[in-house]
Each structure stands twice: as structure tokens, then as C-alpha cells.
Image (cartoon, rainbow, N blue to C red; front, side, top):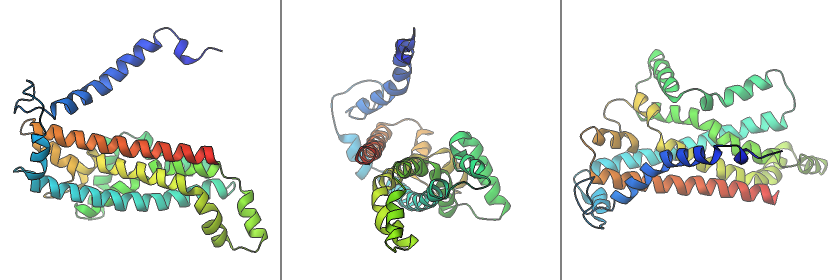
Length: 266
């Protein structure tokens, strides 16, 4: 049976898709080192715009937005990972139960629904219950849509762990909590770390949902960048975008490598 790469046109379509996706990112990264104030003409290699990010006139604004983003991402990833772990335990170790397929679909719903729809629905929900938009609403929204991203690597890791380990612990008079804490949790470690990293970077990079539920006067780094871009694209925005891109690539790569290492060690 032929692999998909042997079908006519597959290579050309792949190259086209990769070009559309990554060439703009490469251009932004290159021009972030441009010494010129122009974003189209090259004026020599320089780190001036990276220095401007930390010392320029907009440094305080971007600094506050970065602290908000990091705080929200850390809390959202931690809570989402805890909820995803509980969900994985119920789905994989809980046996068959009524509504299992519906529960699985519900957990993964944020992955399938367009983000703009989630953003509008979340804003309507917060407005309906009378919750004032701000950091709390951003955090609640981020926790919700980060759960499936944390769930996938955790569930994949748990599926690769034999239930006999926990059964052996129970046979040796361990309680359910002891079997989970001393046996399953250490084995689940790579999946937990991978899920947390993935949830963290998803929260850190989110713009659409955040922009809908953030309220006036509250900024995260993506919304602060968008606000600056509306006044015109400046070289310091390219520097910030490149830094965010580097952090995203680092976290996604770590998540992949840790999860892969965990699967190979199982």
C-alpha cells in the first residue's frame, strides 16, 4: 500500500502550505534585527529593537501586559492540567459508564468549535451571569479552552500505562489514593509536564478569546501587540513577535520531546 507522500501533487502541496505558513514568520524574525526604522528596507544588522522592547517608550505597557499573560498562563495551565488529569482518570481508569462518548466529545469540544464562536459564547455567558470582564474572566476562559490541550498528552500517556501496576499496589494493601500518588502519578509525569507546557503556551498566545473577555483597561501581551499594530507596524513589534515565536517553539518542542520520551520509556 502506497504512503500518502507517493500520491501525485502531495510534495508540491506540502511545500506550498509550509511556505505560506512559515515564510512570513521568517521574514518577521529577520526584520526584527533591522537597524532601520523602516519595516521594508534593510539598514544593517542590529539589536536596537530588542533593546527598545525593554527600555523604549512602550516598555512599561508591554511589561505589564507580559506579567498579566504569564500569570494567567501559569494559573490556567496548572488548573487545566489538574482538571484534565481527573478527566483522564475517569475516562481511562473509570471503566465504561453511561455518557462516556458524550463526555469525551464535551472535553474536546473547544478543539472543534471555531475560536470566534467560543469567544462570543463565553462573553455572552459572563454578561448573562453578571460577571464583570477583567483578569478573572480571562483566567476562567483560558482554563476552559486549555483543558483539551492538557488532556490529550495526559490521556495518551495514561493509556500507555498498564493498570496492573495499580492493581499490584492495591493487592499490597495500598489505598486508591496511595496507588495513584505513589504509582500512577510518577509514571504519568511526562504526560503531565507535556500537557502543562502545551496548555501554558496556548494560553500565553491566545488573542481572540482574550480580546472578547478582557474588558477595558486590561491587556495581555497579544492584545497589547494588536493595539500597537493598529497604529502602524513598527520594528519593535517585530522584535516582540519574534520573542513570542521563540518561546512558543521552545515550549511546543519541549512538550513534544517530553511526551515522546515518556512513551518510549513506557
